[in-house]
Length: 410
Image (cartoon, rainbow, N blue to C red; front, top):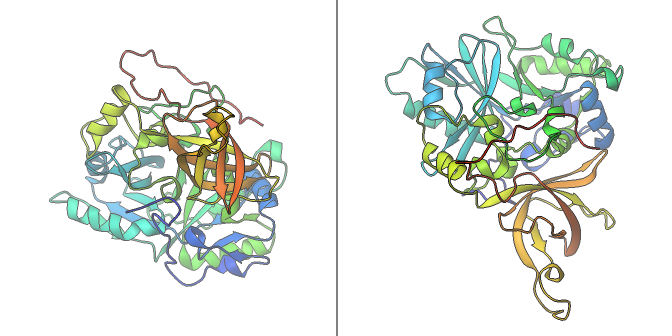
């Protein structure tokens, strides 16, 4: 079983060391970044580069191909997203749930008109490939683990506001992109807006995900060295995996390897926003998805924590989130214990927001409470920003609130 604070879907080095680790200043990661550069000497500067347009080596991740005329209708039938009509060159995100509606796999899907490319974290490849092979029955689909041949490179397109750095990142990446069927395989994260058939629980007009313009491109592994050389020549900017993580957390974007444990359902992390179609046909786990969304409430809720950095301690995944006793009992009861209400799932030092974290807490955790995190025997104060409110779910009879997407708060 997967638990916060230990690797849930452990990344693995699929091939020999990445050429990006030979770039100046590269520091090999650990845990789910082992095998790629965590940073190149200055993670905060690298976040700025990434926003302006830079590449991130994610070659430790996995790639599965699904070919055949039944590929999209079959994937549609076994996962949470509506994929039947996915157009060539389009991207989607879908979840494979267990019969109880708990998240087992998160899948980034790109279809090039011939092949559906499934981009997943490295630790998912073996189990997901085996499950798909068992479930294809007599359908016209072929499934293959392509991780040894193809590597993933993450990036963000540059913007005029950010100036010259990274302005040519899209063209630079496209030069190296895999295109077996004439279409460059670049997955565009749908998190920037609520997808058709999805639903947003976050009650906010300007969702920070609107600025999360994340892309993942498949590159032949034997071209990674040439791509790293382009960085070395100054033709492309580079950022480490820590920079991408910090921006992801600030965008409230859930990830399987960090936010998921053995109990996670999509509602708890607002994953219905991008990876679940509420009105499609039956699939495994659909009953739980529908019941919680329409009639119930998710038992936990995702929050973003703005952390006190005065002790220079950044809480780690698995650290306990507390409601201090002083927030729940009279001050005349000095020995009252704190209440553990959840766990940190991921954390980072953000170049603008400072120390931040995502955490899963009990639904009943008071929204007005100033929380604390127990880390390295130090209590770190934490202001919570509500992502999934306690009232999430119970949608039957409610008038839906249409979010207005806009710029990230500063």
